[in-house]
Amino acid sequence: MSLNRRHFLKTAAATVAATTLPRWYLEELAIPTARAADDQPAIALIGCGGMGRGDAKNASRFGRVVAVCDVDDKQIGEAKKLWPDAEAYKDFRKVMDRKDIQAVVCGTVDHWHTLVSLAALRSKKDVYCEKPLTLTIDEGQRLVKAVKETGQLLQTGSQQRSDKTFRLACELVRNGRIGKLKHVSVWLPSGRREGPFKTATPPAGFDWNLWLGPTPEVEYVPERTHVTFRYWWEYSGGTMTDWGAHHNDIALWGIGAERSGPVSVAAKPQIEMIPGGFSAFSEYAVEYTYANGVTHSCHSTPANAWNGAVLDAKGQQHGVKFEGSDGWIWVTRGKIEASDPEFLTTPLPSNAVRLAESNDHMGNFFDSIKSRKPPICEAEIGHRSATVCHLGVISLRLGRKLQWNPQAERFVGDDEANRWLTRELRKPWSYDAV
Image (cartoon, rainbow, N blue to C red; front, side, top):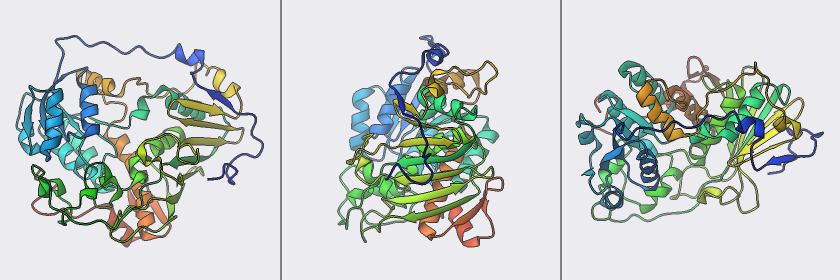
């Protein structure tokens, strides 16, 4: 995608790249608090794939993993290698019966996030749930309500909220360092465009029916599961919700709309998908408008960054660029740049707006468990960030511009679009009875 697109400033000064953060900012960073050896909550891991195991290993710095749960015996086996004394389960509902467990790490596929989190909250367990927090906007509303009703805590796994580089970028933007904010550009990795795929027999030890859970019953296709589940509308939203839950979250933070959202969305797929293959659009362009006039574009990069690389095949980085009346700031993982070096090197004044600080996302969750104060990416934040992504997905699938009321959380005068806010669960699954 051309860096000379119309939103970029034509008079930008020479770019300054910061591989290390400014000294004034580093001196302000808080030192993480150590936890006593006898202050170790019992943790259950639900969803033992690579992401779930990674999250649980991270959590084990602060607690004891006493239960692991997955519908796939192979994944349970991998988890047991790490925590041989943990009790193994295949049905997460049995984990909820254990009164000794204080925290649940939900590392499942996306379509299970809400039901698992609801069950944990209602059984008086705090939750660390992977992003995107939900599969639909209605699910996010349910989780926000459940947190309020139960008094439990939920941390969304959008860990860029606990990254000092992203926080610096957002603080500078919120304090007018680039002048009046005009536009935010977000680039995400493109998805995968493959297929058609053949049906097969589920592997021994893999409960396909339980994996599907509340989603429509279909024949087993290996590409629907594990890593590639995210490229199917039934289970996720493609990279729009996968990486979008990270970078669009930062866009909201910088705009100051992390508890509201845009008022309109218009999206177009850039390429059609292959019949019988992955269904979530792999390449797309989305445009948002906010009530204060700020615009926000979200585009996929044109190549194979789905493999987790920061650069795609053409060298295009994904990340966030804030553009204002006086210049711009670009930020991605491990890197921040600005059109003027002084944007980064000049300290913020003592009366500057300062954002919530966390330098350890999992540590912030366990500090919240102890203090009972909301974590940095609580349910409302995770819900609003997921909502921005879901709005893009709905506009992509309907193929037209939509007007959104972020206070009512409804589309304006559009019954068809409002039907996409929720999903029908396959029986016997229910949000109320889980």
